[in-house]
Length: 334
Image (tube, rainbow, N blue to C red; front, top):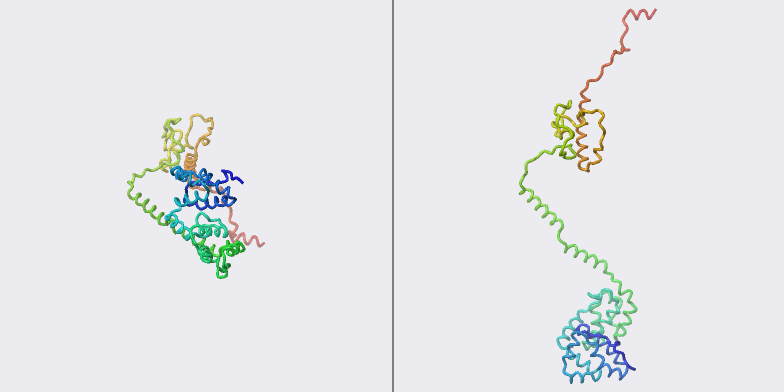
């Protein structure tokens, strides 16, 4: 039985993935002796990047020697990449392996078992009891409630128990407490919003104190727009009966600019003047100014009406409570 080239996985020289690549290729070599020999020629063709540069840097005689079979090629590549420094680094990583650690947040309990057992068998030489203990060291504490390691003698027995209790092992009873602690840490890591707001307020007050005070300018109320040209010349002869716009602090007439009368009191030369849609062309601010102007005018009109004397009645009504004189009283008795 022959093997196709694309069946052999590729490898780029990454030290963290060399164990997976060797494990997959070993399973292909177990098919038969012919595949075992052919892998010595095919495996170098599946190397990429740093691994391919290593192989092509070897002398030609050494390349021919290690290509005799898969065992020779695996020995050569392991001797170069899996040196003592690599072993020390991998031992530390295996001892720090934890269930659902970073990069494996969604794994199942059995996935953690397969991952750590495979790494232990490739790097360490441990007894079954030591392997079980090391796997359980990276598991959560509540696993020990369901799995009693004192009664487990083989690694396969641990594998079966993890699969049997897998649903319960995924339910962490302390998950709510962990989430609460994580939320508290997130809140504590954020800057104090109150202190930041107080700092901004103090800075604003400092800038306000240091700001140069400008002279106060009284803002006149009433003219909705600034007229560049007035239709009629300024006529100060027309004067309102009570307080004028100038006395109320309002702008003058919008027809002639005079502050002696309101523009409602302006006298036109032609009585049959046509009404114009003045308010339709105003924006919001101008319309509000016009309403303020009109309110001031109405206020003066209401004051004017309040000061007018009330009309007296033409005839006084006879008081029905007046007492009749003695003569009339005597006559009424007859």
